[in-house]
Image (cartoon, rainbow, N blue to C red; front, side, top):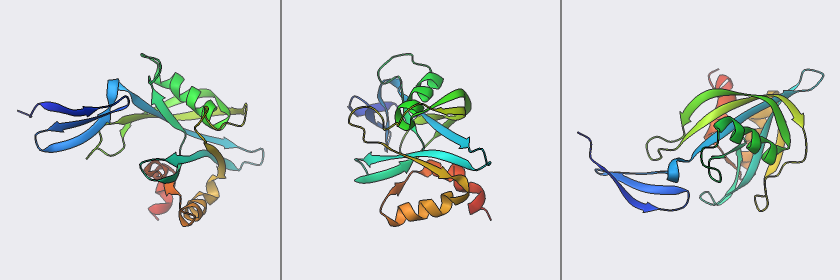
Amino acid sequence: MAAAEEIMWEGRFITAKRRGRWEYVGRARGIHAAVILAIDEDADGTRHVLLVDQFRVPLGRRCIELPAGLVGDDEEGEESALAAARELEEETGYRAGRMEAAGDFYSSPGMVSESFCLFRAHDLCKTGEGGGVDGEDIRVHRVPLATLASQIATWRAEGFAIDVKLLLLLGADMAR
């Protein structure tokens, strides 16, 4: 029988827990995240991915990421697809005509119980500049998929952190 879960500390968004000798962190109040893979195409067929960067306190630097946000942090019972659509438009200034759920994933299961639902945004329409809500300081990047690996190398050399979820887009190149 597994040891009982003990809450060591709880804040507004995260909870530190222990089960036996294992310590880990989870989202408070059942909050989870939505992550959005948004790829659009120019008239000439060039495909671009929408990425964002923002300062991440735990890393002490800006991080290149797929657009994402918390589901239900302000509205209990919020649907993941609606949160994903809202976050995509707030962060990037693009609205999706359709959101397709690709399933739930776990970012670092050895130390964090947090999950996220990955959404693929289709039929993108630019509605604004993005940048997030007040105080977020999110920068939007529209990067050609063909040059993504070299762009990530450039960002890394400039001191940016790179979110592990970008492996989703680099996977085929890394396997060669």
